[in-house]
Length: 233
Image (cartoon, rainbow, N blue to C red; front, side):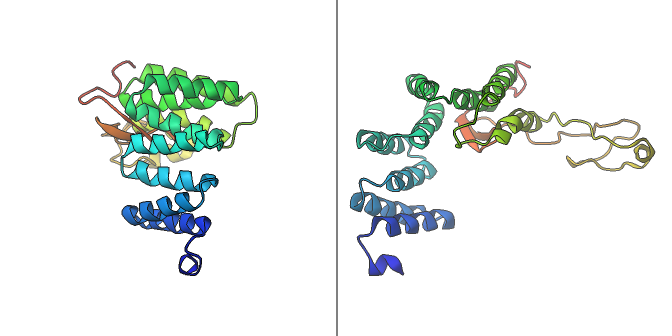
């Protein structure tokens, strides 16, 4: 193993940390990532590795502190601010959200904050607000080459993904000859005789209360328990 042969090499430590993350061994990953960061404080990968493990351990404030330390050490860039923006939503930190949105606005990436705001609104069940924010993100992303953190197709898929999570599956498009032979739809569940494009039960689970995955890129936020996912539809 390269880490044994070169124990002070920060890149090998960070690579091992990422391997532990992939294996789900987060405590081991954190140890390796911290050693890698200690041995290579000028390497951005180390800050990402430590922050990633802390996020998976739900230690959000510590992850934020690590990323801010990267900025203090001159390792600034879209990836660092994307993680800080991400953390600001489950933390409910409006000041941090505004600060990171301003950074992206000043660096030609105004669409990303809108996307994250839309994801947060979707997770909280604010469908009307989420739809408007998704549209704004798509419009902004269509005007220029995006920053590479989120691909253009992801902006386009964000709104439809949220609709599917709310149970709003579009009706299937069958050719006329096949309509009488339909039995099941792509969303799953029983076909309802005599009706096109609808079935008993929701096509997809609706967003749950509490922290929930949402949106197109696996972002999550703290929702409100007992809230109707379509309360402001």
